[in-house]
Length: 308
Ligand code: MG
Image (cartoon, rainbow, N blue to C red):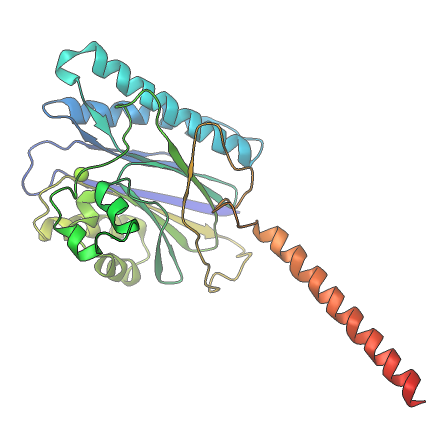
């Protein structure tokens, strides 16, 4: 038996009048969208994109592949819906939005992501970023042409390379993570991560478990730092009545892999092409142990037969 608690908090920030961020807080689905496009455009783009994601909350899935493909299909539908609205209304032309969405099914978190909003896993007091920013500066950092400090003040730091609603086709990053008792998952717009450092985000998370309290505190912290942007925070808490794993074991996260529309991983722990699922590793470990024990027995029999 597991218990999911989802909290959300948002604020227009200390400078902007409108809040172009939108969020979705369902029973087991959560999402953040950070709209752009001037006038009404940003608000319309972010709220429109969440429509197909909301429908996932009521669906049943037969396996992991079904969740991933429904999530991917919802992103494609969101892209089409925002594009359609932008082409129908001249005042909305050019609008778009980031979209980061998560769904919990059983012991697994399924994540899909486009843009520069972020998802983090908080486990054993550590913060693990699950998403890659689709930004110009993130690409320059990855290419070794920019440091993180330089990126923070770079004139193109707000330029995103992928968004929902601006292209006919958009690539969606998909990631699946096995959850353990008292894991928390943070989804947020860049209105949190630009003014507030990861160290400061982590201090708030370490000081309090309650997801509602933490979500409010993080938004307040962004405002205290004079965030010029809209800020949105969603926090999911995952608790098991009978914890089934050792959540103190540090887990290594491989980078999120870019998935095109036609390639969906069927593994429950889809991290990168080289990694395999946790259960498969268990079998490999068991087979290696059996082999080692066999070798030791053979050596002992050989040694005994020589000694006597
Ligand atoms: Mg923003």
